Image 1 (cartoon, helix red, strand yellow):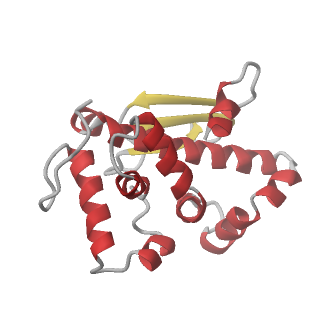
Image 2 (cartoon, rainbow, N blue to C red):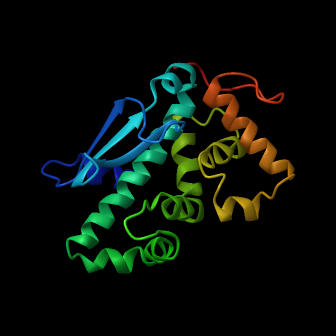
Length: 193
């Protein structure tokens, strides 16, 4: 995760990533990340819904920021490839295959990015959340949070099928933290932002 942060935070980087409180492009999303103005390469903006920001716990917002940072990271690699950097194609071959197989021409690659996150980034997200939170909860709690916004992926459905105890636990933990409210008997552990 530190490597990803440094992609946007080092002096003289060509990549710009900004977080703002604003209604996301897709109504109903807690946050989303896109190229600025929808098309400016190497310039990304994450919009975090103000209602979500005002009700969620700090750990939920931290999870959302990490998740959106991964979107900015993947979009930056897509921009690199579009500029002729074929090294990124080799480095992220699975992502490119997912994009090719699931994205219509000119469509959003968000579903492919989510699948790639589910397959590759659950352990790093878990560890980043654990470190951010001072390891005050169990590894399971942080891993459950890492699955937030990835419920529609094939990977989530495979590992946590409908009706499974793990699926219900993960969804309830995320809902409790997102809303800072009890969800089906699960209380939030984080503190309000």
